[in-house]
Image (cartoon, rainbow, N blue to C red; front, side):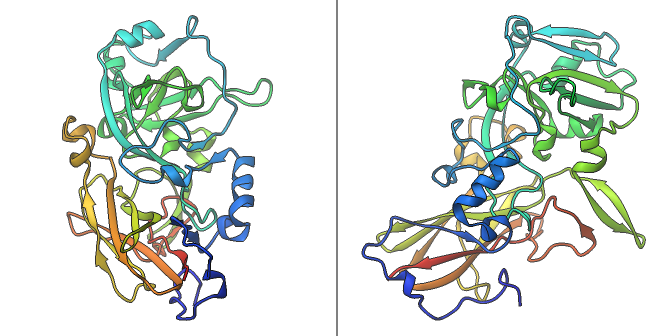
Length: 379
């Protein structure tokens, strides 16, 4: 039986006998780099490939702070002069460029949403800190395209960043269909949590595509290209793909919509024991409930759930439909020892977060299965 699914040991490790009880216990992943390399080395390994996870202290509540917001970069962070910046839009009835001031003058909308790396928390990473939630503001993609005469003959759009490495590679680029962009209600973000968009988050302009993984949220956006066929750049065609078994054959499929999932993010001391908190999101649906196990899956109990309308009642439903719900669970006075914890989300349509991955899917992306964590409760 694998460590990720085996039952908790009833033995009390000697290491749990501490001089003083800490205010917070570490939730330790049971697989992947986060387990193999240890707490410090795994962060170093992630940084080497431009992955910076959310710090544990911000892994709770309805919004992630701008400082420390997760990063998953493919290229360098360009320095963009706001005075000379221009967003080019081509492949539309009236191609044109927008200055930063012209973009700021367009009607703005807001979105609250989960932004998540497509490989977050998979079997290789183990940890799951490449996720965050912010309040984004700027003109909608629809508004910008309307100023260009609409989509015209374009059925797809490619989004190009201003982050090339001269003589080596072009800036990052990714493509989506018009249908996907309309369904997502895509936004061109100029601000984050009420602050001007910072350079590491894509200043002066980035894509925000609610409900779709963050490989599509192109930063340092410089060019929107209308196309009459799907964009087949390397990130669409090869990088962010899984293989799915269809009619007995394995077919390459691009990662897209964030699936239903949840995870416990913190374990903090309270007067009666420990408070387990976390998030549930995905699937573009209302989370009906979240259940918690503290005994390796033998029993499950319902957590207290606060949905997005509890925190963001000033926004209409369509602007917060891809936001996470926050849950907490009071774990009353557990005995000292080692435990395996997990959460499981349920949608209002009856869908349940899976216990195991779909055997008809191979790949590193959109792994929605229950995420097990080990915690050592001291005496």
